[in-house]
Length: 153
Image 1 (cartoon, rainbow, N blue to C red):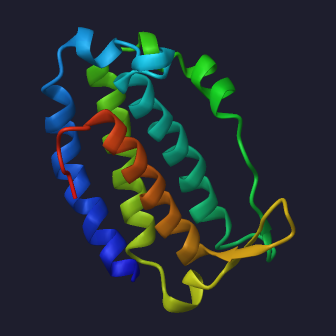
Image 2: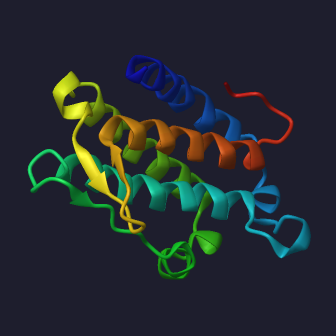
Protein backbone atom coordinates (compact mmCIF):
# COMPACT_ATOMS: atom_id res chain seq x y z
CA UNK A 1 0.00 0.00 0.00
CA UNK A 2 2.85 2.41 0.72
CA UNK A 3 4.02 1.98 -2.88
CA UNK A 4 0.63 3.25 -4.10
CA UNK A 5 1.02 6.31 -1.88
CA UNK A 6 4.54 6.94 -3.19
CA UNK A 7 3.41 6.69 -6.81
CA UNK A 8 0.48 9.05 -6.16
CA UNK A 9 2.74 11.61 -4.49
CA UNK A 10 5.23 11.39 -7.35
CA UNK A 11 2.40 12.02 -9.79
CA UNK A 12 1.12 15.01 -7.82
CA UNK A 13 4.61 16.50 -7.76
CA UNK A 14 4.48 16.58 -11.55
CA UNK A 15 0.90 17.81 -11.88
CA UNK A 16 0.23 20.30 -9.09
CA UNK A 17 2.89 22.96 -9.80
CA UNK A 18 1.85 23.27 -13.45
CA UNK A 19 -1.85 23.28 -12.60
CA UNK A 20 -1.36 25.91 -9.89
CA UNK A 21 0.73 28.08 -12.23
CA UNK A 22 -2.25 28.21 -14.60
CA UNK A 23 -4.13 30.39 -12.10
CA UNK A 24 -3.77 34.14 -12.30
CA UNK A 25 -2.69 35.88 -9.08
CA UNK A 26 -6.28 37.09 -8.70
CA UNK A 27 -7.67 33.56 -9.04
CA UNK A 28 -5.09 32.20 -6.60
CA UNK A 29 -5.74 34.81 -3.91
CA UNK A 30 -9.53 35.17 -4.16
CA UNK A 31 -11.30 33.86 -1.09
CA UNK A 32 -13.63 30.97 -1.81
CA UNK A 33 -17.41 31.28 -1.19
CA UNK A 34 -18.25 31.93 2.43
CA UNK A 35 -14.91 33.66 3.03
CA UNK A 36 -13.09 30.34 3.05
CA UNK A 37 -9.36 30.10 2.40
CA UNK A 38 -8.19 31.01 -1.09
CA UNK A 39 -6.48 28.52 -3.38
CA UNK A 40 -3.16 30.06 -2.34
CA UNK A 41 -3.99 29.71 1.36
CA UNK A 42 -5.05 26.11 0.83
CA UNK A 43 -1.73 25.34 -0.87
CA UNK A 44 0.00 27.12 1.99
CA UNK A 45 -1.95 24.97 4.45
CA UNK A 46 -0.65 21.93 2.60
CA UNK A 47 2.87 23.31 3.09
CA UNK A 48 2.21 23.56 6.83
CA UNK A 49 0.88 20.00 6.80
CA UNK A 50 3.98 18.84 4.94
CA UNK A 51 6.27 20.61 7.41
CA UNK A 52 4.60 18.99 10.39
CA UNK A 53 4.34 15.55 8.81
CA UNK A 54 7.91 15.55 7.55
CA UNK A 55 9.05 16.07 11.14
CA UNK A 56 6.74 13.28 12.34
CA UNK A 57 7.93 10.85 9.66
CA UNK A 58 11.53 11.46 10.74
CA UNK A 59 11.12 11.66 14.53
CA UNK A 60 9.20 8.41 14.85
CA UNK A 61 12.25 6.59 13.51
CA UNK A 62 14.47 7.49 16.46
CA UNK A 63 12.37 8.72 19.38
CA UNK A 64 10.85 6.42 22.03
CA UNK A 65 7.71 4.52 21.03
CA UNK A 66 4.91 5.36 20.88
CA UNK A 67 5.67 8.88 19.68
CA UNK A 68 3.07 11.42 20.79
CA UNK A 69 1.31 12.77 17.70
CA UNK A 70 1.65 16.49 18.35
CA UNK A 71 -1.10 18.54 16.77
CA UNK A 72 -0.73 22.05 15.39
CA UNK A 73 -3.15 24.94 15.12
CA UNK A 74 -3.72 25.40 11.39
CA UNK A 75 -5.09 28.93 11.79
CA UNK A 76 -2.09 30.03 13.85
CA UNK A 77 0.25 28.54 11.27
CA UNK A 78 -1.66 30.32 8.49
CA UNK A 79 -1.37 33.64 10.33
CA UNK A 80 2.34 33.17 11.05
CA UNK A 81 3.26 32.03 7.54
CA UNK A 82 1.08 34.68 5.84
CA UNK A 83 0.42 32.37 2.91
CA UNK A 84 -2.45 34.51 1.64
CA UNK A 85 -0.15 37.44 0.89
CA UNK A 86 2.81 35.38 -0.35
CA UNK A 87 3.81 35.11 -3.99
CA UNK A 88 1.97 32.14 -5.53
CA UNK A 89 5.16 30.85 -7.12
CA UNK A 90 6.92 30.92 -3.77
CA UNK A 91 4.22 28.87 -2.06
CA UNK A 92 4.11 26.42 -4.97
CA UNK A 93 7.89 25.98 -4.85
CA UNK A 94 7.74 25.41 -1.09
CA UNK A 95 5.00 22.79 -1.52
CA UNK A 96 7.11 21.03 -4.15
CA UNK A 97 10.28 21.11 -2.09
CA UNK A 98 8.63 19.84 1.08
CA UNK A 99 6.94 16.98 -0.72
CA UNK A 100 10.17 16.00 -2.47
CA UNK A 101 11.72 15.78 1.01
CA UNK A 102 8.82 13.63 2.20
CA UNK A 103 9.32 11.32 -0.76
CA UNK A 104 13.01 10.96 0.10
CA UNK A 105 12.04 9.90 3.63
CA UNK A 106 9.17 7.54 2.86
CA UNK A 107 10.72 5.76 -0.12
CA UNK A 108 13.48 4.30 2.04
CA UNK A 109 11.32 3.11 4.93
CA UNK A 110 11.43 -0.59 5.77
CA UNK A 111 8.33 -2.67 6.53
CA UNK A 112 9.35 -2.63 10.22
CA UNK A 113 9.64 1.17 10.22
CA UNK A 114 6.19 1.49 8.66
CA UNK A 115 4.82 -0.24 11.78
CA UNK A 116 6.30 2.34 14.18
CA UNK A 117 3.58 3.79 16.40
CA UNK A 118 2.16 7.22 17.20
CA UNK A 119 0.05 7.94 20.27
CA UNK A 120 -2.97 10.10 19.48
CA UNK A 121 -4.53 12.60 21.88
CA UNK A 122 -7.52 10.30 22.42
CA UNK A 123 -5.20 7.54 23.63
CA UNK A 124 -5.44 5.49 20.45
CA UNK A 125 -2.50 4.60 18.29
CA UNK A 126 -1.75 4.67 14.57
CA UNK A 127 1.19 3.36 12.59
CA UNK A 128 3.60 5.38 10.49
CA UNK A 129 2.13 3.74 7.41
CA UNK A 130 -1.36 4.88 8.40
CA UNK A 131 -0.12 8.42 8.99
CA UNK A 132 1.61 8.54 5.59
CA UNK A 133 -1.55 7.36 3.85
CA UNK A 134 -3.64 9.83 5.86
CA UNK A 135 -1.23 12.60 4.82
CA UNK A 136 -1.94 11.84 1.16
CA UNK A 137 -5.72 11.63 1.76
CA UNK A 138 -5.63 15.02 3.50
CA UNK A 139 -3.65 16.48 0.60
CA UNK A 140 -6.06 15.08 -2.00
CA UNK A 141 -9.02 16.56 -0.10
CA UNK A 142 -7.53 20.05 -0.28
CA UNK A 143 -6.27 19.65 -3.85
CA UNK A 144 -9.87 18.96 -4.86
CA UNK A 145 -10.77 22.32 -3.30
CA UNK A 146 -7.92 24.08 -5.13
CA UNK A 147 -8.60 22.37 -8.46
CA UNK A 148 -12.36 21.62 -8.41
CA UNK A 149 -12.57 21.18 -12.18
CA UNK A 150 -9.47 19.01 -12.57
CA UNK A 151 -8.89 15.41 -11.65
CA UNK A 152 -5.26 15.22 -10.59
CA UNK A 153 -5.44 11.60 -9.46
